[in-house]
Image 1 (spheres, rainbow, N blue to C red):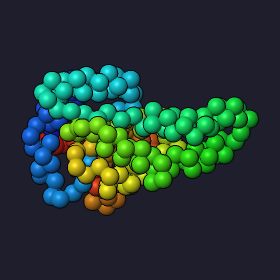
Image 2 (image 1 turned 135 degrees about the horizontal axis):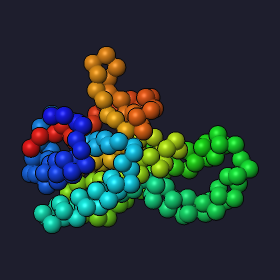
Image 3 (image 1 turned 90 degrees about the horizontal axis):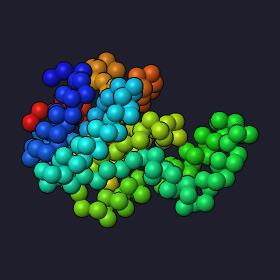
Length: 200
C-alpha cells in the first residue's frame, strides 16, 4: 500500500484500521510491541489535530475507547505542578536557548517524569487504543524515539499510535528512521509499524 495518502484517504484508512478487531487484538505483529507511527506532512499539522479529534469521535461510535494524550499538554502540566512554568517563561528571553533546552530536558525526562505520567493516565482511564500527539510542539526538549523506547514496558496492553509530523522510513541499509518535519534524520527507531501500511 502506498503511504502517500491524501487527507480523506488517510482518515478513512485510520478509521478502518483502528476500529478493526485485528488491530485491537494486536494480530500480525509477530510479538513486537504494539506501537504504530502515523506519519503526516508537517504542513498538515493543524488539519491533523481536527482529523485526530474526528477519528476519536468516529471510532468511539464503534465502541472503541481512545486514550488521547498530547505530549505538549502533559509537559505543561508537569512544569506547572513543579512550579517552574512561570519561572521558565520569565527567564526565557534572557537565557541561551541551550540552557532552556537543558533545563526542560531534565524536568521532562521521559524515563523519570513523562512516561510515569503517561503510565498513570493508562492506569486511570479504561481504553482500547492510545493516541500520542504533540510531537512537534515538544521538540527538541522531548524526542519521540526516547518516549517510545521508555514506553515499551508501560504501554503494551493496548495498541499505541504516535501521530508524527514527518516521515517514518525503513531502509535495509540504515534501518528505520523518524524524520521530524521531513528535515531531522537522527532519530532511529525500529520497533514501530507504519499504520498507513497496516492492512485489515
